[in-house]
Image 1 (cartoon, rainbow, N blue to C red):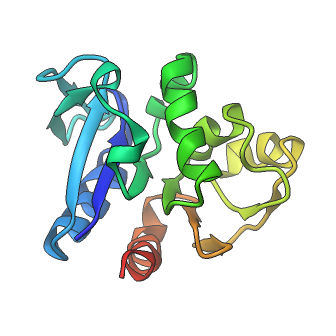
Image 2: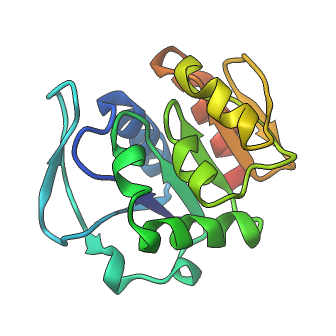
Image 3: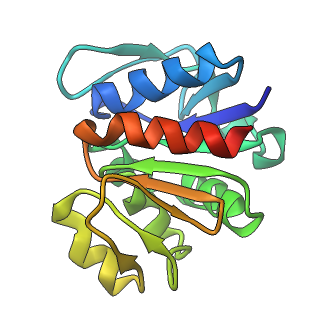
Length: 170
C-alpha cells in the first residue's frame, strides 16, 4: 500500500481527482488531500465534486509519502504561486518518487523547474509552456517518463492515466 499525497485547491477538474483517487483507493492505496487549511472543503470547477482537505501544507513533509497526484483544472496554477507547494512537488521529482499529473497539473512541475529533459504531456493550452520548460512534449493520452512521471492531457485520458499510475505503484 502506498501513501499518495494529492495537492489541490478549489477549481480542480472534478474527474481528474475523483477517478484517480477512487482507482488508487480501490487498490488499497491511501490518498491524503493537501491544501492550505485542514478540514476545509474544496469544490471542483464543474461543481460535481466536493473534497475535504485532510491536512495543511504546513503540517506535512514529502518524506511522509510514496507518490504524488496533481489533478488539473485551475488548481495547479493557483498552487504554484505558493513556494511551499512548489518545494513539496519538487521533492517528489528530485527523489524519483512516482508523480501523476494530468491536464494542467504539469504547471506546478514547470514552476518547480523539474521537467527539463523529460517526456511528458498535458492539456494543449500548456503545451508551449511545457516546451519552453524543456519538455519533450508528446500529444498522447498518457506518457510515462523514466518509470516515475505519468502525465495525461485531459479527462478522456483518465483510463490510460490510471492504468499507468497503478502500474508504477505495484
